[in-house]
Amino acid sequence: MYPMRLLRYWFIHHFLRIEQERRKGPLSICEIGIDSGQMRKFMQSVAETPGIPAVPCSSWVGVDRVVQHDALASLGYTSCRQSDIEHSEEWVSSDADAFILLHVMEHLYEPERVFGKIASRMKPGSVMMGGSPSVPHWCVRLREPRLRANRVTGSHRSAFSPKRLKDIARQNGLQLDFLAGAFLVRASGFLLEDRAWWLRFNLLFGALFPSWPGETYWVMRKPSASSA
Image 1 (tube, one colour):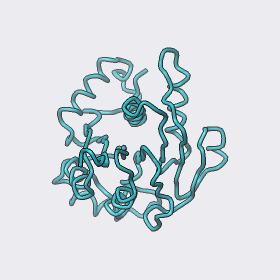
Image 2 (spheres, helix red, strand yellow):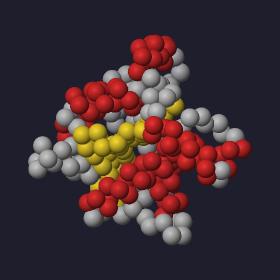
Image 3 (cartoon, rainbow, N blue to C red):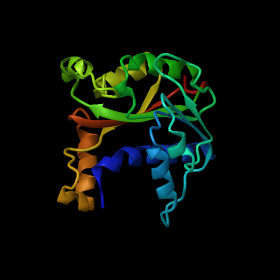
Image 4 (cartoon, helix red, strand yellow):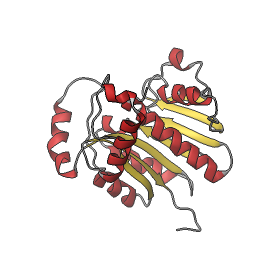
């Protein structure tokens, strides 16, 4: 009933909900690394749940290296752009209120460069939000060469830590609104994943110990002129 694996979508849903409430209007969203549309599917399932209001969106643009048009056709994307985000820039929208980077940056060789591309085009007050696998910072230099030695297409290439994410925000002049880990332990089919208290415990653990090896979720904001 409470699968830890779905927390990645749960975090982004709440980030979007909070941002929409902050703006008091529908969001223009650019999602980078859409795969088969899992984030949109989660948002649709939430909207169909009694008692939970949908997050109003004026547009939702998807970007991916390979666009799976058949899988995405019925999911409500305003448009889908096929682009290699690491080697091009035409996909970066300066109109988006929110950029979603969910489990995509760890697949890149130069994630800082892509963060910089987006940050340079973000309008004041807009946000980047996302998440990735995470390790303590001292492990990054040990883990990254092993990831890059893996020749399997689509494998992880970069390792992230909370410190690396904080450095990325600072280097790009972004305000870090939120950063937390997600869990102490995740195991699909584990009997405790049928218990709400276990989910709450793991979220609390992640908030208290974001450097624990697992996953980290974050929100970075481009300061508005009034707060700069």
